[in-house]
Length: 394
Image (cartoon, rainbow, N blue to C red; front, side):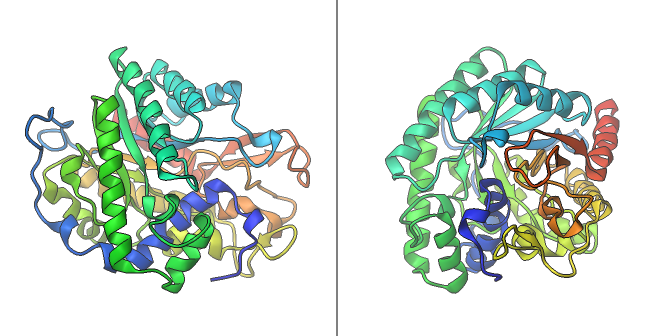
């Protein structure tokens, strides 16, 4: 791995990169012990039916994008209600999505964004992501988010609650490390006890499921890494963060087929790639492999060539596979990455090439992180917009 300047990594880049593939590559053989490929009961006794995942429906039921709510790394990139409303309008009316995953920390931001999404007719996937704090704080944050989700559900919105994302990275104590980046480094270096890690992870996932059930009575799930060993009996929907690469549809189908064996709807709660040639092969670590964070300012690694076409083609390929499998939902990571601005004038500083977002951030003053900015759609945005619009007419 290229050395990382810790303060140079945005929360969103970490979530997409280390969260999606760094842990999967290391823990897949440790946590993926066959449980995900085994047949589990479709529902525990007394549990309400899960959303329909199979049957006469053809193709994905829900198509959309992930949308982060957070403080941002500068005043200019912080969440604001006005920007959020404009973004969700574009998600619904221009991208033609029918679903959005609202994730991040801060219950009020999560709730306000979920409310706006529901008002626009979007199906809402609400996922709190609070990390690097004690377990009790994470569970309390989940419980309060779940209460707000339940309130929205009772008002008639189509709401799913995810109890979190890849806890092995966010919850202290499962893997050694003072923060998420140290835990990633320890995973990649093998500085952990796999049996202890698996035991602690299973216990916390169960505790989070119990917390979610106590406050929310709609469909419950958890954002798992592709090869993570999860007891899906605890949940209504099998959710996978998927950044795999195959040369054809059959490869993706074979990769994802084991998740269907639980007899429950399967959702791809994250997918995508960066915006450079070869990014699909780099998967969820593309953000890290493509940027040299030891430099100030960070710049693209040698040989990285921006390619919006590559990103668009990969997304169309994986959506072909998801549709062919009649999966329940697929959500692209992510809508916008304001900490990774586009630089058409200085290609080596074009950090948007290392982002997974469907739109590119353009600053009025490129060198100033406090500069006003706007976003412009990439080829991937237009490609998915056409696909989503066609699907809506089916």
